[in-house]
Length: 273
Image (tube, rainbow, N blue to C red):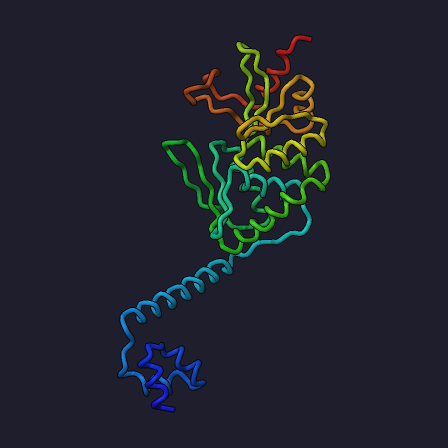
């Protein structure tokens, strides 16, 4: 057996590999092979495998830290709003959840809704160049769970009650929507942006549940226009209070911060009776 162990070592097998083949304890195997070195290539491979194992262990521990969260089975307007915002202007990663926005109202809303399932405050970062703030929840298990719930929400939201659908739509238009009101060119429309066209189709279908007609505009917009549709959107969905357009943009025609819902009011009022 001892000669067999030495022969295996000469075949450039590691301590663990020889122990598995012989069925002997690693301490016993080591005594017989300790003077037979591994090749540099094998040593590098063993090192990389050990490093990968340590990283997996560290990540699993970080994800299963004392910072647990409350799972949920029933969707309500708060849970839908939270997950939808993380889908639209947020990011759901394997190491946590993140939300980016200039608007303090929406940042505070996401933070408030997250407290429903996760008791710990986020890390805040403000980009002085762009004016965008980022709130970050670093938790592997939370990231994996929210990813699962996001997929569930996208597949099930069309079957949910109207109140839940309304919450989903408002999150989308708060994050991705703009009120395009340019009276000088007779433009009165709501535009919603999304790279994933399947999301735009979902948004259009949900809007139809409220009697709101919309159209897809290439390459990546859903558009609501016409007085009746804007009135229905104002009544059924609307933009959240405190959600402003960025008046500092170079192409802003208003040159000041205005609430999106105020612009919607102005657009509707500008229609001739």
